[in-house]
Image (cartoon, rainbow, N blue to C red; front, side, top):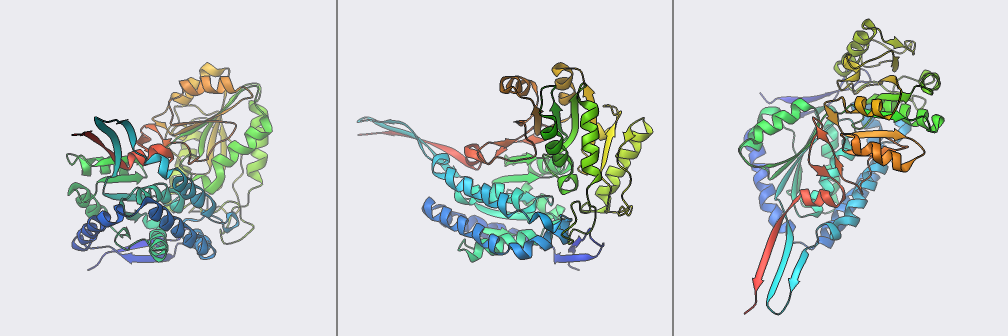
Amino acid sequence: MTRMLKCISPIDGSVYAERPVASKSDAQAATRRARKAQLEWANRPIEERIMLVSAGVVKIGQMNDEIVPELAWQMGRPVRYGGEFGGFKERADKMAELAIEGLAPILIEDSDKFVRRIKREPLGVVFVVAPWNYPYMTAINTVAPALIAGNSVVLKHATQTLLVGERMADAFQEAGVPGDVFQNLFLDHETTSELIAGRAFDFVNFTGSVGGGKAMEQAAAGTFTGLGLELGGKDPGYVRADADLDAAVETLIDGAMFNSGQCCCGIERIYVHETLADQFVEKATAIVSAYKLGNPLDPETTLGPMASVRFADLVRSQIKEAVGMGAKTHIEKFSEDDGGAYLSPQILTNVNHEMRVMREESFGPVVGIMPVKDDVEAISLMNDSDFGLTASIWTQDTSIAEEIGGAIQTGTVFMNRCDYLDPSLCWTGCKDTGRGGGLSIIGYHNLTRPKSYHLKKA
């Protein structure tokens, strides 16, 4: 019997979409086609590849009116926010703009005796395993530069956002990207691991849990397949005594609560200078108390359900444990909180790093706030984490922000902003957040390999 992947909608618990899992033989055949098609694709002029990828992006934009409610049904984001096309296009456009520079040969010598240069060659078949929380934007981070660089792409999307990979493959193929160059596959974990272990891919980009990243590494062990891993996060914000308090509260709380807290670089813990801490909590509580939790298809809803009851239960358990250990809650339970996927947002104080809510990834609408006496204490607390994706510093002093940033174990340092991905900069992390780097020129370097030419003239 063919196994089915089912997207259970957080709106009402119904089966919103289902697709059959590809058999092992069908999946292997698809990867062989991808490998064969890649050679012809890589031989096309880079300008043509850029044009076709950009045309695929336009096609996605033309689907946006249908995509926005699909996302609400699949993972719960309110329709009022209009989907992801703005960020999707920004990232793809920037990678198209950087392509010539990022893939340019490095000329060492061109004399009457020698030509010496380093060229960049595509890796071959790139496997993209994308998450459900920002399903279009996270996928395009790798899909666009991989295709532009001359690789073929196999996309496997999360079951929670089952329709996204299908939409993307259809759009890019309608735009003229050959069907075997960009394929979407519905795969189970066993077949995925077997394909990686069998060297079906030349590079694997995975965004997801730490456990998922370990499974990818285990599958690739001994194959020497390159891996790019963006895993968990527990991103901190630090508000110094000289910060613009209103801007800090508004931005950090939005960074903690937007998308029901289900953001890769969302703010999960906040440290505030002790002279501002009470005001910060008061203002943050007022903002969060005004949210409207409800059906994401309702334009008035500002906070939708979490993507699944399982995810909401994890956050509830962290909050309950923290309160049992002395934490104080500041948000009354919303009437729409059904004990399932619809979860009230929460702000916690009297928290410490003995609590899971301050150490383990929550990935939900909860944030703990701690007062600190100085930069030294803030740096120590920010670094007291197994993760390192981003950190947000709020100050009027750029030099201080750079100094603090240099002491934080993280992939990106923000000053006076947070929860944003700049495609001109390398998207990377450290510790259990993973390894590798996407976007920017470095993203192209990680999706290609260098080849050296040492040519002696006769």
